[in-house]
Amino acid sequence: MVIERGPGRPPNGYAELAGFEIPSVTEVLDIVGEKEGLCRHFADLGLYGFIDRDRKAEVGNRVHAAIEATIHGDPQERITALLEPSLESDPLAHRDRSPEDGEQRRAEMRQWSWNSYGAWLEWWQLASFDLEPIATETPVVHRDYRITKSKERSRVGYAGTPDMVAWYTPRPGERRRVVVDWKTTRELRPNSAAQAGAYGVAWEHGEVLVGGELTKLGDRIDGALLVRAGRDGSVTTLFLEGHEWDAAKRMWASARALFAYRGALKSRVDAANERSAKERKAAAQAA
Image (cartoon, one colour):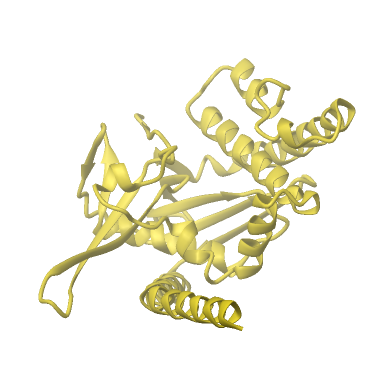
């Protein structure tokens, strides 16, 4: 069985892949989960209390990489290296208050990573009998076109990278092509379903990066399997099909609409705020 091993998320975003500026799935969904977006904002400002989010995100990245390596049969040494951050491979080292603080943080991250990966591996050893991977970490691009008021065609759309697409046998005699999404969060969230819905729509109706080329496959996606392997060693799974899968795709469509409306209004709001700021400055100078 040959499994397509994609390159993962482009390090500089999806614009180069798509050929134009295009939002990612997670960027669109941030407008639904504004609390997480706020945490990211404070982390960017360097406020230490919010760095915990980046630490958990880094653990998630490492566990995802270890899962992909396991599925493709990589050697154990590589998997161990992915799960155990060293000072040299630690992207958060520059934020540590002291070397001791950094080592304590890395030790905690190693424990979290092994807990999560171990929980997933135990689940995978049984679940893999019902899963036949098709592709992992393979970017997708969904290009939409709309007619603007000036009668020009304007490109809109989105891009993302599903963790895996696979054949899944939920019940004896049934075989479904599904999006599989790994999570290391404390719990599954509705946004997780919407994210899978986005990937499913793009795989079915958009383009998939296969062999270095964006290709329109048109393969039907019948649902999603969400697998949460927590940092505490627990596992939660959820299979979405039928009306639940439709609801996930509808939630994604609603998030896209909200993202587009916000974008359409933001430039006008920003211009109004800038004009008001100039007027206040001019009034202060004249006083």
